[in-house]
Length: 124
Image 1 (cartoon, rainbow, N blue to C red):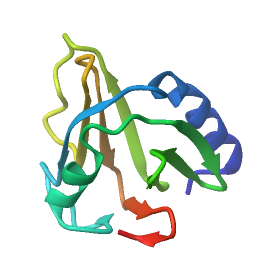
Image 2: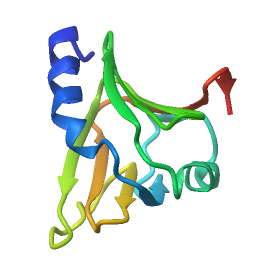
Image 3: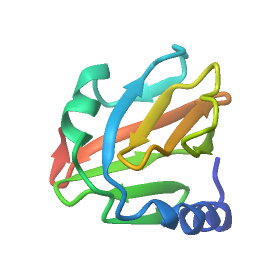
């Protein structure tokens, strides 16, 4: 479980992503039985492509990205990799979020982890 101080540090580090626009989202590239999503693969990309990250914050043991209409939440058990345009993508990842500037965020699940996409007033 991400402890409160750890989630605060991760959220602060992710602040460099605020304002970035999403160009693509790939989920379950490397399927993991304990990587949990709120929906099947396509809706993540359909709902997030073209959206800008408005703010990032920690909430208890979670990291939340605010897109205005949508909220994307990561839980404990997730390891993040910030990739610059020239960096190689990890061979295994459960989610890859690409940005219009060529950078990306890859995330892998260690033991178990959650990637939940919510509409502001409920699940998508």
